[in-house]
Length: 569
Image 1 (cartoon, rainbow, N blue to C red):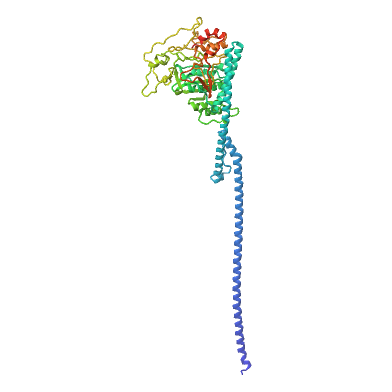
Image 2 (image 1 turned 180 degrees about the vertical axis):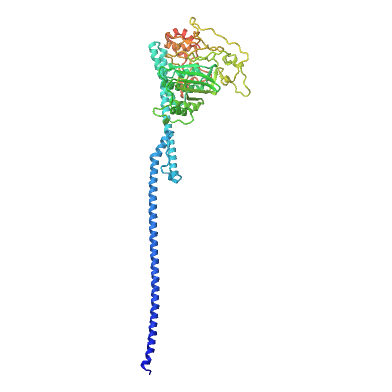
């Protein structure tokens, strides 16, 4: 057994080794713990970073959501404002624009919507509204025009009946006072017929038919008799040939001229005259109406030009309140018959100049021997060269040979083609014109138009104090015979070198004078070859009254000797 002191170092070494082993084990455990702690710390840091990242993401999403919500609210507000602008501003402006073209329709209120679907949808809505309103207006306007056509037809028929009653009383009674009252009633009824007929034409009714061609001067004088203040209208003619309007265009031209005359008389002072002149043009005949009124403003000229053009469909709602129907009525006739009317030039007297151009296809020439102009028609100026070949009956079949392919001449011997008036050349060796004896008051002769003779220089149209030329709507007398023979005779040989009219001592406006005035021209109801035995006016048959059934009183027989010769021209 070893001794204890010798074993102590061994025990110490073993203890030291054991302690070292324990220390090593402790160090290893500590390192493991530290490593675990470091891992946990790293994991914690990573988790913290993840939480922070998630928080940032959540905050970003929240901000994005808030921004998007703000944009949505802003867009919704802008869309509501734009829709409100569409409803309260753009749509009413569009409705106004449809009635008044000068009113503009505003665009988008918010320009960011330009080029987007919002703009296209709003534009589509406006277009649909425009189509719907136009369709409804057309339907309503057509219904209104239909009602007006029916109403004017009835009133026009009653006015014709009233006219027949008045005329019957004029033939039955010769009392001067009663005749004057009947004349005033006849004039008032004639004015009513003009307004009724114009309203019917404006609403699509037929202007009426005339079964014969009529001299242009007779048509103008007939239109003059339909106007209040007709005595202020002075008609002169510069035509050197018997120019006439074809039958189908007589009433449209008469309506047009009467509307222009009514406009000129209404817009000029009651003491001022309205000048009407007839001219010959290269492409037809021209009627010029000059007044000394107040003229027209730019917007009125624009409205008149648009109405007279006759290119657009007329709507009653476009005529204003009160309706300006005169130019609109003329525009409808212009569109239907092909003549032109303009009022864009000022008159020499500061008013308005209206020009009616009647093209050649609506004109013809009449034989003045068989179809003389009425005594009331304006006389043509004198000419120094040979009268036109058509003025002579002998020149009608021999003066002109139509080229090959020319249609056969018309069956009516008194109707000659108007185109030859501007195409014919005068004969190389003209014969001197045939002169006529001067009229004499002693023997009762009066100037009259013969085939080869031209009117004297300076002949002025007769005065029309109390004169109403019968110009029924749709029916004009074949010769345009006046109803009153009390016109002024021209006095020639004035020292000043011009002709003037002799002041009348008294104008006879009695019924007898009116009946005697018809003796020099064919009766209004004389049938025309190939024409029906009645006149058609505005779609209503009007039976003619035979001339032999008209009663003639003592006054007519007494005055026929002088007045009949005066009206013979």
